[in-house]
Length: 289
Image 1 (cartoon, rainbow, N blue to C red):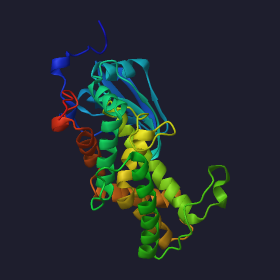
Image 2: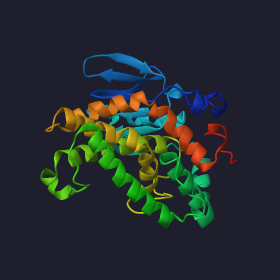
Image 3: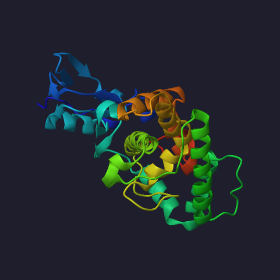
């Protein structure tokens, strides 16, 4: 008899009814007594109701057995390997029972220049609702976005009394960048991690972007850019205004507060479904408007 018996698909709760993701660090995930169990480095032992959580986020110092991975796959619960407190995203395991409806919808929208442009316009309007986007091409929108973002940097710098000389940094010479550029980069990396986790868990394709087209995560950049003005920019400039020598941990602490204050984890899935025209925010149904 198997240690963990696979439940029927009909008995599993829909994703919209599941609990929030569970984050774990420093311990071991295994299957024992017909359940998935967590054994922490501090000797905490608890059963994990994997069928009722939306995702399992494995942080630093976590090991997981083959049986536990299989158990999560059997109940359609994604597993992601992340950094401390979920502020980095390294990989996501795909569950074999995932419905591919959302990926197909995204691919169909991406394949048509007309619908790809329509989605890009909706993304732009979420960031700058007072701008006129009707009839604008993606290339024009990118240009408009660049100008608006430059203005936002300058405005936020004035708001927090932080000198802003422009977005200049070289990842290969990190120490040569000024404090505010390093703070913005650290905050952005964490926001990309959060968006990557949500996009992967919903079954969308990070590689198919509507505004961005380069790199390995264009869709992640599309979604993250919507929220930067109220999260990463605020956190970075505020951190430097408090301490000009602020390190990454200080920036991330403020970023977490911003993310919680604007209820970002709840907003991102809804916004993605609205942007792609999926009815009722239903992952299982995946219907188009």
